Image (cartoon, rainbow, N blue to C red):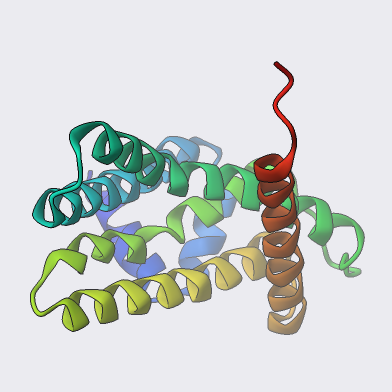
Length: 183
């Protein structure tokens, strides 16, 4: 447990050596999953509280909480897959040597700042929303560091890989949302 908490703290502080440590530790995939699941829980609790406070109907609130709970998990897996595909092919550098599991481990720890999103419930709403925005931007920065370390990139290549991965993930989600149902 102390190793997980130490890694989470250092990952949140964007320490490159921690991301290198996680990249090399094949057993850290479980810890990365725990970080993402904690982010799922924090976001779900915040959504539940905000929806309940706003008087959202129970079935709508349950659906919103479910989607909010799955969001970090889907972003972690899908975003990591696209970052690996883009980074290991198009932006590949001479020193790039990685596999999908390395990217998955490092980006999982990059979700540590997302735990702050539970504080979206703080009044006044402007404070909670500011914390939420800050946590999202901090998480984006952490993901860029994670990609940079996992793919042995420069920061510029990591930002490019992150941008293309986000665009591809958005296109897939948008395509799924507008596609006609098969039944």
